[in-house]
Structures are given as C-alpha cells and as structure tokens.
Image (tube, rainbow, N blue to C red; front, side, top):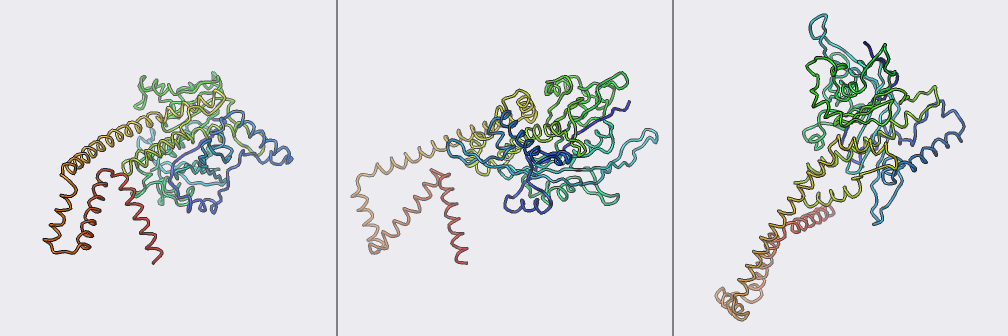
Length: 475
C-alpha cells in the first residue's frame, strides 16, 4: 500500500562556528537577506500596502500575546533590550535566502527482483535556506527540502539520505560528501568538519531533521497507524518496520521509551521529539506556502514559530557542549560564563499558552538539556572543592612560613646578621641591599604565585598582552 503525502515541510538543520567580523559579509554577498518577521505568498503581497502592514502587525501582536518577552525579543522581534541590572542582551542575527539549490544523492539499495544491491539516485531540491547566528559564535543553518514525489516512502528516503554527513551527492563520478556540499553551497565555504575545528568535537555526524507531514486521514482504502509512522520518520527507519517482522523492528521497551516523548494535544495530528529529529504527522494541520494562494498562517506557524523553539533548544544544547569541551582550558573563566549563560538563556517556560510550552518541554527533554546542565554543575562542584583544598594547603604553608619568621628573636639580630654578611662579602651598602631586595621580590613573586595561582595567571596574561601591544607599536 502506497501512503500519499498531501503537504510537507522538511528542514535539514546543522550547527557551525562563525566569526562575526568576517563571516557575516559572506552571507550577504551570496544572496542572504535579513529574515522577515513573516513570509507572505506572492498573491498576498499583491494586495494593498495596508493589508500587508496589517499582516505584519497581526504577527507582532500574536508574538506579544503568546510568548514571554525575553524569548519573543530574542527569537522573533529582535528588539534591543537590557535587563534590570543593565546587562546588554546579546542579539541573534537571522538571514534567509529564497533560492533553488539542488543536487542528487547517490546510494545503493537492495533490489529484491535482481537479488543484489543496485545504484540509486535521488534528487534533492532546496527552496529556502536560513541562517541563525547566536551569541558565542554558534551558528545554526536550515534548508527546506522540496519533495519530488508525493509518497511517504519517497519522503522517508529523502530524509534518510539528507540527515547523514557522508551521503554522496553530485554528478555520477564526481560526488562529494553531503556536508561538503552544504559547506560550499549553503554556508559560503564555512567548514562543518575538520581536524582543527573545535566544533567538530561535539557536532556529531548527523544533521537534525524537522519535519511536518500532512496526509489524508486514515480510511478503509488507506489505513495506517500514525504513531508507527512517527517512529519510522523520526528515527529514519523503513516505512512499515514497526508493524512487521524486520531486522530493524524496535523492541517494545525501546518503542515505548521513545513514545514517551510524543506530543498529542489535538486529534488531527501528533508530534514526536527525539535527539536527532522533530516530527509532526497529521491531517488538516499544515499547508505549504503557495504563491497562488493567500493562506500563510499554517506555514508560518510551523516553519517560523515552532521551528524557532526547536532552534533555540539546539542553541542551548550546543552551548552546553561547548562549555564542557572548553572547561579544562580555563575552569574559572568558563565557570563564570556558564553561570551567566544560565541566567540569561535557561528558560523553563516561554509562553502564556500551553502548546508552545509543551513543545518546548518535549524538545528540551529529547535533547537532554537538563542532564547536560546537571553534569556541568557537578564539574563545577568538583572544581570548587579542589580549589578550596588547594587554598587550604597554601594557607597552611603560609602559616608555617610566618611561624618560622616569628621564631627569629628580634629584628636587630637580623640586621646584625645582614651586616656581617655584607662585611664578609666586602660589598658597599647600595649593591648589597639592592641585590637583597631583588632576591626578596623574586622570591615573593613565586611565593604569591604558589599561594594564589589563578590571580598570578591573570597577571601574567595582562603583562604579556601589554608587552605584545608595546612591541606592535614599536614595530
């Protein structure tokens, strides 16, 4: 039985590192423009200027009435804001490009008639590309795919190929890994993998998949289990694998574990949030943006509003990965930055309404964000204990030194001893006391460096920076 797809929104998502000084011009030079508050179809844009302005104002009002100000201003309106303490909120920069970018996947599949693996090609066409530039130079991109056939099996094949970094794309005999194609055609040359790329340590080897699929409702002619399809699309498994004997058929325990993340708020659609995907399947829930029609709200809701919730959680997750990866290089610095990050971005709720909060919670749980925070906080606890123990040892050493000095009978005795040394050396007073003072200063520097290593490290870095600036000026 062939399952038909009426409408679909398929977005392939990945993370990349960017330089805010040099990389932003790359995007504007390659056709990217600032993301609009709402995408309107061409037929709607042909209406009066007042109708367009009303649509934009209606969108702003909906954001204001639905989402908490911190999340709304950060992800949607771009409003410049300061916290009560005067902290300047970092801004997100967003770009989009309406351009056809296309290639084809090359892979092998078992042919039951020929009883062997045969070569297959699958066209990949993207109509829209989006760029989100977050604080910390964490970038997230997405590309909307256009299905070339209206069957669920075709959509499953497309998702399965597009989610892998190493899927081969291009012309026959001139293929490249999909991640290289994305780097070249979507990210304007910014790499996704590489030996000297820190991001490669925690970005994984798969792209994320965000999919909203609208199908005809089940009937006697075309019956299907929506929950089974959620699992199969969400995990990129073959269609029908849940309900039949198959080597990839999930165990009941594993299936039930994943289904705990299901979103089921209305009868006409269900959603499923997993580690590498967010999937929605239903009927009468989504309508794509069509220039021949004026309808835009269903597309805007899933393509911009709820997708922003998914992207925001990805930003938080990758930021936590980044903190964990960099922590040991400067524990105190990243401890402070981590606490600051949590204060400004670790939202528990984002909306006045139940559905955005439900979607936010499910995605957050699927990405294990709370576990990542707890893990990092444990590392901070271990750091605090270690620092305290080391400080206590140094303080004990300092007390020992003080006790030894206090045991000396009197200052006069010290001076007398110094005079005897000076006489034996035959030095005059100035060179003798100059040398003695230098020895005491150097010794004191190393002693303080031992007692307070973190402060000494900061002092050395400052001195080094001053020396480098002086050298550049002289040069």
